[in-house]
Image (cartoon, rainbow, N blue to C red; front, side):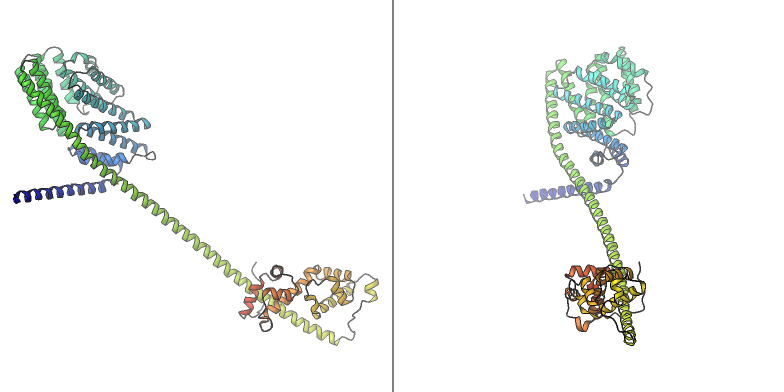
Length: 568
């Protein structure tokens, strides 16, 4: 008993390892194929399909089909449509999953209609007609359905009109098979006649097989049954060596059915039933599930028609058993395949997410790099402007300091000159100024007195100091004082007096011993400005910098140098 459990356990472990290996192989294949161009992926899928590696073919077609989007090129869309048709065909002919076959064929049909892929529409129509025929056979227990024959005839004519040689041959092959097995060959005479007039290239799939089949059917239609048997026997020689095992098996199976119908026409029941036995064996060998069911159904009908009820009953039971097994097997395989498809879809979704994440990451990195360059450029620009402003302020500070130093020298020289002058400075207006217009000499003298008064009186630094107050200090007519300032100083009184105030403010901001404890506002008020804002605006107007900048430069110990013209 223990040995039995150990053996069962080992079997389960081996199955688990095989499943894991298969899953790993699928993932490896997915990773290897996911980035292939659409044309290469479609070719790889067709090669796998041709080699009867249907799972690998399905994965290739699934990857390509899932790529479909409106932004891709028309060529890639066409390849996606072909891949989707191939998925439907795989489900129909290899997996016998007719539900998924219909779903993917409908999806392909939508793509073909949206992009006007007419050749693909014909292929889809052919697959759907086959699908409908299989469905009708299963539902009706393989009884003759005129509607199925009519749909296949319509497909043939549609393929001829669209010059689709592949579908023309395929639809005629299906048409002959359906008509022959149900003994309705006369109903397809127009199609056979039209086929004989078509110029179809020899390289088209099924063409060589169909040419031989056409001769055999014509012989059968003309009641030349022995000739038909001989011709049908030649069909196996025209199944291409490059054909997939599935198609070779289908061709051999149909050959047996054609010969079965012909032996029936010759009333040779023994040979006829042998052909059905061959057909069943071929269907089992090549795993043509619907062929097994169909062969059993035809054997049941054959024995029933010939009064052998026991064999008829035996084959009928086999028929229902195979039919139920086929449906159950299809359901089970469909469930397993759905998991396989879900795995592909999940991997495809993960890849799309990774691609999206990479794209977002690349965009983010590019944005960060661009933003970094922009920040660096802005910082460099700000730093460069700061450096230029700093250099400019230093030059302006030195210029102001130099001008103030020059003014001090001029004051000393002027005081010495006044001290040696024999004529005292008049403090009252002369008659010439009061009664006569000012001449140039009088203007010059008055201008000198204005300068002297401003330099010697602290009152000018009081808040609200006016022209009248200056004229009163000088004992002169305010109109004369205003006139002289306008003409000689080329300025109005407010600008003239503010210039002196700013010069004094510069001296006080530079005098760290006496005014180091003063704020900017305090210095401004000390020279007659009402507010810090007014002081700052006026200060910058005359010096080109703010009082704070000037004070900082003074505290750094900047010394006046030979004046250098500031850059414009």
